[in-house]
Amino acid sequence: MDTRTSPIRLRISHLQDELKNRGAHAVLVPSADPHLSEYLPQRWQAREWLSGFTGSMATLVVTLDQAALFADSRYWVQAEAELQGTGIELVKIATGTSAAHVDWLARRVPQGQTVLVDGQVLGLAAAQSLRRALDAAGVVLRTDIDPINAIWPDRPGLPTEPIYAHLPPQATQSRAAKLAWVRQAMAKHGAALHFVSTVDDIAWITNLRGSDVHYNPVFLAHLLIDMTGATLFVAPNKLDAALVQALGADGVKVKAYDQAPAALLGLPANGTLLVDPKRITYGLRECVAAGCQVIEAINPSTLLKSRKNAQEAAFVREAMMEDGAAMCEFYAAFEAALAAGQTPTEIDVDTWLSAARAKRKGFMGLSFSTIAGFNANGAMPHYRATPESHATIQGDGMLLIDSGGQYLGGTTDITRVWPIGTVSAAMKRDYTLVLKGTMNLSRARFPRGTLSPMLDALARAPLWEQGIDFGHGTGHGVGYFLAVHEGPQSISKAVPEPQMAFEPGMITSIEPGVYRAGQWGVRIENLVLTVPVQADPADADAGFGDFLAFETLTLCPIDTRCIERSLLRIDEVDWLNSYHATVRERLSPLLQGTESQAALQWLMARTQAL
Image 1 (cartoon, rainbow, N blue to C red):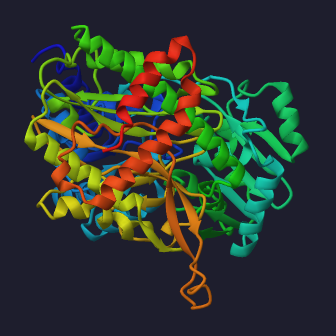
Image 2: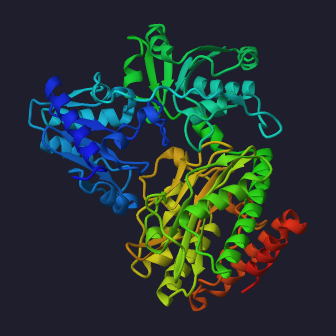
Image 3: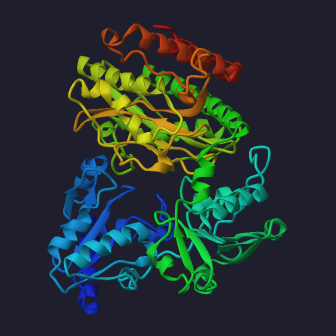
């Protein structure tokens, strides 16, 4: 047992001892916090602390005699490596939304025994599903105990970073206006109260930003809205006096973060409270006063913030230009280093690219941890190079770089693949098929209100024709100087739901891929804006309804050296040439001057028409 894995075995053993002390048989440890966030503050990274698995999504289950980690195909290679020697079994699941761990518990926990899970980090919808399954199996579920607290002596506290205002001109809508829109939606649901826990919704409603978690400019808080005011529950000293006064001017009171449960307990018995079952924890739902009517529906802010207005879209286009210019400067320097015989590492890619972004106007930080994967490492969709484990970029193959930035006027997310040395015919085939999928979906036209999962097959079709598929979703929503992953839209194999309908103003990624374990990975990702399509005059009165299309926002060359030209149709070549002409036109003005000459020359070379 080496020193890396022995702490994990010891922690699991201590947790099993705690289960015995509690008279329980198993504990469920989700990747979640009290806000059901994707990126977690250190305090709530219990799953990683217990298992050693560093991926962003997985579920850990520990029983008296075994432990299992449930992860989807994005993480299989990574999980197998990180779990080695820990005694934790990897259970491979189809998708990140799979409930395989629920069935696993129902089958393996003896009838009459108890399963523990901290209700403060368990989603309400997930809790309802878990309770049904365990009740049917005769297993007791307890959500009032967090056994991890007893075995994590140096567990981190709450983050203390200050909160700041997102100001005009980038903040194009006032806090008062956003609260008014939310209240209008509350009234339609028949609710006089609304409780919000999701941090990006709160940041959007309040026009505030923070840095409590890596990469997303959000802060830990809860928000209780009524028809005339609101209460923001946030840790003391995170807001300065000026912000407290500005919030008060809009009817928003400030209370301590830990007073949110008491506020729910104190709601009037005849009140009507709107909550989103997918965006509130079971523990907080249990705090709602008896007699208060609870209405379950999607947070109105989730729908409202997904639809960027024309001013926001204009700022996003500017952010894309800044981001594209940064990438041109990085790629020009990177290729020059290779040509000079240097052998940079994946760590260098992250460092150099981050430095290039940091120089751009409005840059506030990265939007997620940069993925730079050479050859086999590129086959892990959520790979991250570390000082202890990374590749040197030399020899032949392909380098996948997935990166993004947070700007005052938008959030970016882009993936490109670049040839290193000689690229094989098989690599070119995979690359071209992925590119065809990206283009196929980018060019789609569809009726307004089309459910986003219905478009998933458009990106997969060129791959499916060759018997190839990928395990992650094709596209996710992107926030406006907010979360790089947001809803409600999801281009994926998810079961369609009404709130997933495409509407004008939504920003979504398009990112099909091919991953060959131990060999290479390909992913080509752009962000697109959903825009109305001008109807043909002949069809305007035919009753076909409104149609939408995608405007490609991302501005960076797609490397043509990896393309197998014989696999592209003329119309696909035309789309790529047109895209590159736009990239050249939009980025050239930002690359003028002596210091940017190399980047401009690189841009001109990489946007040559096929």
